[in-house]
Amino acid sequence: MATKQSRMHGRVEGARARCAVAGCTAPGEYKAPLESANFDGPGSWRFLCLDHVREHNSKYNFFEGMSADEITRAQHPLAGWERPSRRFAANGADPPPKWSDFSDPLEAISGRFGKLRERAGGAPSRFSKPERRALSVLGLGEDADRHALRRRYSALVRRYHPDKNGGDRSHERKLGEVIEAYQLLRRTPGFA
Image (cartoon, rainbow, N blue to C red; front, side, top):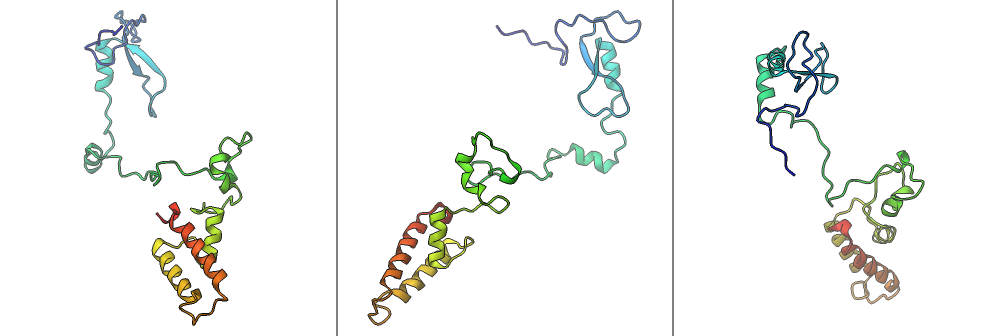
């Protein structure tokens, strides 16, 4: 059942306490923080009547102690958005935990990030073990991009193909490894 919205913002419905100001007999229906020199957010509070909460609020000045420039910056619609924030992951997931700082006794997370455990402390690889082996066949590092992959593949095919090296068939096995490695890597998400 929906309750009727109070037209008085901040009013606590059904408050039974009296106003916390000495001598006031009105019901304390509004929360007000206790006054202290270092108030910084939620903490201790008391109930006040409408008149005393208005008096309490009239004494509060958010901009007290600020210069005119600081006040202007604080009132800007984008104030606070200049703070650094985490980057979004490209694949929509959060980055994996650092295994050196993480204990997973039930191995609940290692199914997803298990490959990284063996490389704790190092940067996570974007390639699986077979893909890293294929990169080494082509003589490429993990920092290679799709263009470098294609260029290296073309160079190795020209080197090992019998039609390109005078009919020498002694490099056919190596050519087969190069073609197999390229076929695996060209479909790899690491080169997407």
